[in-house]
Image (cartoon, rainbow, N blue to C red; front, side):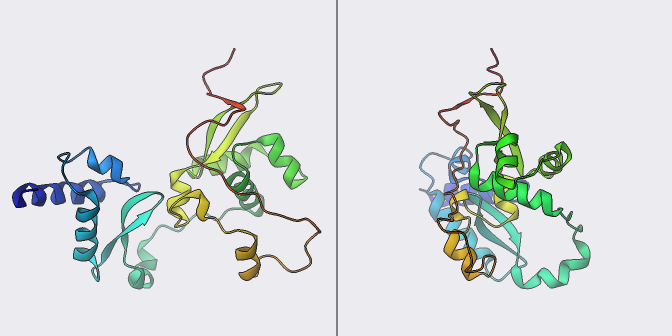
Amino acid sequence: MAGDVRARALRVIEAVLFASREPVSEADLATRVPSDADIGDIVTALQTHYAGRGVVLVRAAGGWAFRTAPDLAPTLVREREEPRKLSRAALEVLAIIAYHQPVTRSEIEEVRGVATSRGTLDTLLEAGWIRLRGRRRAPGRPVTYGTTTGFLSHFGLTSIDDLPGLDDLKGAGFLDGRLPKGFSIPMPSGGDALADDEDALGDDP
């Protein structure tokens, strides 16, 4: 790839990443530059260029995004918007959706053992951390919920597979050794593709 063309491709990708509020995948970046552009090489060059600066290029939610350099976070505390604090109920619902998706409201309630208010789900929807996925092929065709790229980005996850497993949670002290026999944590499953028992939201009979 000629030097001038590569330089322009690098500038285009840099501009796209700066302008985007969400992480951008390499596939999306490739649509903005000539087909022979080496996206991996360009991203690596940008990472090197911004290393040690006020913003750095990092992988997040399956794509790339500019983020404030970690060592500057304390300096910017007063400049950042105070994040919304979630209730315990909302955190429980979010965790269940993350690990059990696609999951319906009744399935969430079955796991929690208590009713889930519509307001709790609305809070998570407004935060941009969960989304309506589709409808379960079951009586009443209940809506299914799943997480979003915003959820991955906020919690610093490249993909839903990066959620901590049972051993990770034990090691972090979130679970003690007195767990019920046979206790396990489901393997999270994300992605936009509908499950075998799901229909698209607009496919109502």
